[in-house]
Length: 166
Length: 120
Image 1 (tube, each protein chain N blue to C red):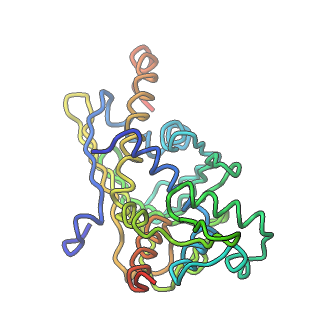
Image 2 (cartoon, rainbow over the protein chains, first blue to last red):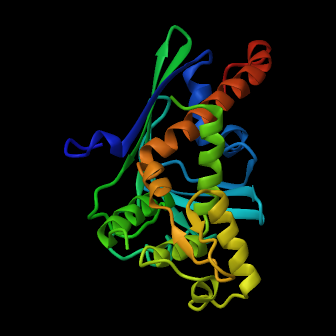
């Protein structure tokens, strides 16, 4: 995250795992391992494609059981930093099944909003255990394209505020 | 201070917001209260379908419905939206749960690792 970002624009979580760094690295970079833990409760990941190299793309499908039946959400992104067993940085945007990023208007939102987030994973070996720091941050408003629904929500709230309580 | 109940509520709200149609409905309601008929207009959807979407939004606390007459106009409940609007904080419980699962999963893998090769 950059200096001018408000702290509430990122979530930072530090964890220690009783596992070697190379295994924790695989949790993020091996689709089969990734599928085992990533989905929220009640969700599955039918698709997880990962071209883990700088500039490589990722495409993840999350299937959630909703009251109105199964619902698929697709996310795409690009790997920005790949330092094996040390640091992984990738972007994430909501997309369609072909990895086409959904524009804010597709999401029912006004145009011109920040829509991409960045996930940064830093790993450190501590005597055979792994310390992991994960930072999930918004990318500044001038980033083109992309649409994370949570961010769209943020913007919807701002929009509601400008409309006032009518 | 996130409780399990908060998380359940959050999950329900997120599920409700994960549909572009429902977000479009919310955006429309941001302009003012509207009846189901009015909301159905911009979408090529039947009234029962749009009603279903509105019920999901209602359950998630994002939309309230008037009790007045048979029209029961829908209104946006901005308070609920405000509550979940700091997107990073929405993600925190999601990530925490994920890492709990990662931890469990690593523990399951552990016995195999101890007896097998440590190489990839």
